[in-house]
Image 1 (tube, rainbow over the protein chains, first blue to last red):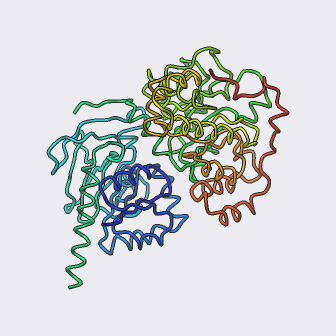
Image 2 (cartoon, chains in turn orange, yellow):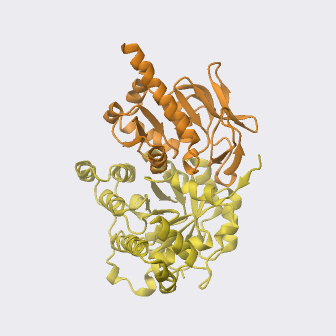
Image 3 (cartoon, each protein chain N blue to C red):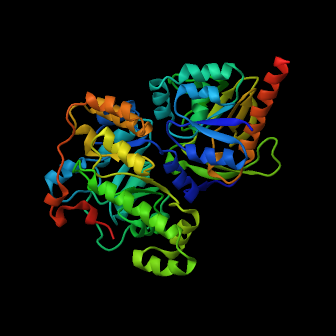
Length: 199
Length: 295
């Protein structure tokens, strides 16, 4: 069994934990940077990106997460997590973790009154996915190595680059576990790669 | 790819993103920026904080739209605002301005002493206060997407918020183990819509996020409410009525995130200066208790 950590500073932490557990894997809440050593993959959940960023700074998460990522351990960012994972942010705002080669527009789809649900087809998934967008961002520019998984109105709303996965919507607010399964596969893949290297 | 706006999932989901956070009352852009810098997950824009509303007396209404607009432009975190109970037009004005959440609040003077807003009619989500499970279920029935304890606003006294949080949670536990044939009578006793009570019984929890509000004045108060089972906290008068609002706000945010780290909360509390002066609830005449408003 693999262990996935959900960054537990603020936001929809419990929803992710429940999905990971329902998929039969172990889930822990990460509240201290040293807990990153105990996990195989990290989810940065939806919440308020401005707030989460401040809390990550205050509690010393930035460097440990970058190190975690450099060790080829997978990271999945939803909504606020996508904003935090981006290399660039639209406007004069400084990017944060810089894990994925994308430029993200925060609240790209607008304020809460513009929040919406839609059925979206996602690359690699047969049936459409119910996507929930809440004050959601989107990626305006993507790097060459970034694989686009979903578009909404021509905006990139889900993408993957090596061992980082992002979605502008909230798979954790639906009963559909296909997104978490995708991440679990990425984590398992990363573990088997490390094992091959060790032989 | 049909786009569905204002669905239950979208409205309730917005509150789920606020969990574990602190929502702070602010009366201008400057305070909103302090709140945002301290790590607030949202700000509540209003004309006067509850303790000043209490002191001023008279009719308390929706904030001047200029203040709401100023706050909307000042911060990137969500902005909430209060409308009077039952005041359809105040709520519609706030919705049209792009406010992210509306608090149909007993802190303001009610516009309707019989009916609350039909919140399911709106695209913008609503938060409402509750003192017990019946009130919680009625508000959900009307379409509230988030709940909070009523507590007793503007008193700096946590006792009522504790009472309301404990009451709701103990009533949920009671309903959860009840047999199906007892549920209709319980719905009648609580004054709760039957279908919503049935859902609460089935899942063992409220279908929406439930924050603590009304009397939180210290980091320890915020941590207490989290420990009792709140999903997050609203702090009204507590922050900007304290000696050092920046420090105070930051400490409340930290105490909410790490609510079981007592050493940390102790350390945070040491350098804060004095909290707002509180009011003993028994010294408040029933007519002065804001929690009695709402039906």
